[in-house]
Amino acid sequence: LGAVRAATGAAQYDAVLSWFFASGLATEGEFTFGTAQHPLREEFIRSAGLAVGTDLSRLHTIRSEEGALSAKDALLFSLTQQPTEFQKRYDAFVREVCVPRMAALLEGAGGEDEEEIFYQAFPCVRVVQPD
Image (cartoon, rainbow, N blue to C red; front, top):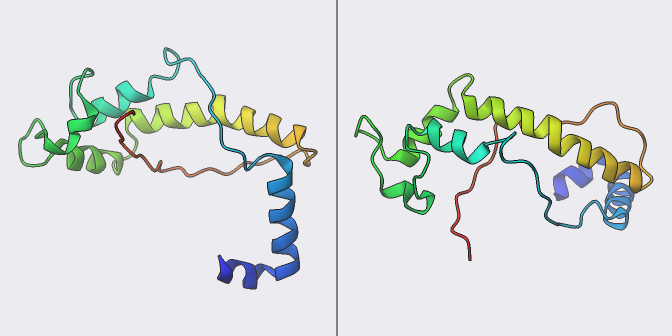
């Protein structure tokens, strides 16, 4: 981040980060959404060619339908193809759930009315076991 600070200018960089941390936008939290309307887990699993009930904690040990790749490798490969159903569902989730929530948080924090919000088009997906 030091390089970004130098390229942006220390004063501007520090001002933006100070506003961000003071606004509450940096506070992590949880929110709920309709999984029937946004079945991300199911499409994620289907992208690997697996049954919907697959135990994701074992993803690295399961072979793909073709048997040549692990299910994890098959899933990661499928996410690079254009476009997968998971990618379509992810885009809809971001646009219909996340962006309106972020816009409301930004407005509540006294931010400007943003006309554009950028997001990572290719999702960073982590599969972890619950506590």
